[in-house]
Image (cartoon, rainbow, N blue to C red; front, top):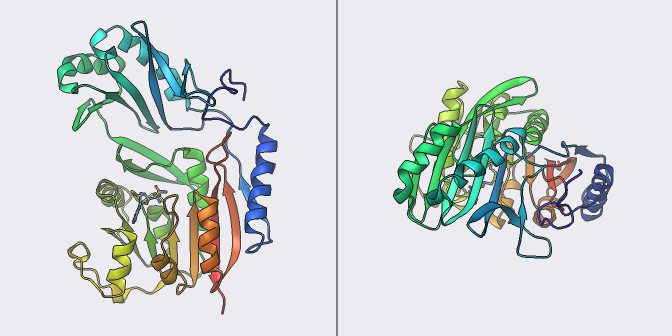
Length: 365
Ligand SMILES: C[S@@+](CC[C@H](N)C(=O)[O-])C[C@H]1O[C@@H](n2cnc3c(N)ncnc32)[C@H](O)[C@@H]1O
């Protein structure tokens, strides 16, 4: 990548060719997981530029003028005028948006950040202010009608929306299209093409399927396509806005074998252990499920002990991880009952040290 900010920007820190980055990541993973797996590690390559469909920038204020900023490698922040890793819709909008804001002093004043979310059918911008956005309502409406984007403005405790702010995505999973709507406040995978590869890989890893339990399911990103392989699916997640979207995504894709419930991982564990009853599980007979598979895609902290104990009892595990260190810790427990049969690296975060992995485990008979 030929980026003028490569030495100074704190986001893209690996100053290596793509092949060198790939070798580095494979070597790190082989070393970390040698105790658990010695087979082939699949590496799913990303584009080197234009791969991020979600991006956040700070705002640099100087002498009444503004520009975008990023955290710096050796300084708190650096001023930038472009970013090569964001997708084309975002990079095209960045200068137009900034110019439109600069035309109106009220919009410039106390603006501290801009977030972009691009998807197949939408481009949503969120402007973040250190002042009540109600005071600039008309100015915001004006800029939205000029740029024809979905516009959100936020300040402490206030959210205003202008135009269509729904995030509509289409993902191609193993040649079939799935539609999603997502919430701007909940988790969204940042690299769309890699997300498609990751979901396709997880779907293809399913064999001998009965019922699936999925924890940390978000808006049904994996759940909807993978549900086609199972008789019944129980999928849980802590975020209310994600579960609201997941229910809509079932309808959008005419899927009717999934029960989504807003429950933390700890809550669904105590419901299954019959320690507690939840109104949110009303009408769900937990005893009717024969879980042949569990799918987890936890936050960076990995899975808690109670979840690992439960996973130990399920024949097939599909574990998607954004943190190799917690994955390694969790495999210490899981490898007491299971064997790793597939290992993949999904290069979501090109030019960074972050590594996303997928692991399939089978229970040792
Ligand atoms: C890495 S994201 C994956 C989401 C989804 N699988 C996807 O691909 O979009 C992790 C998810 O775990 C959820 N989460 C965080 N802590 C949780 C907890 N204690 N119990 C259940 N879900 C949790 C987050 O809200 C987030 O949606």
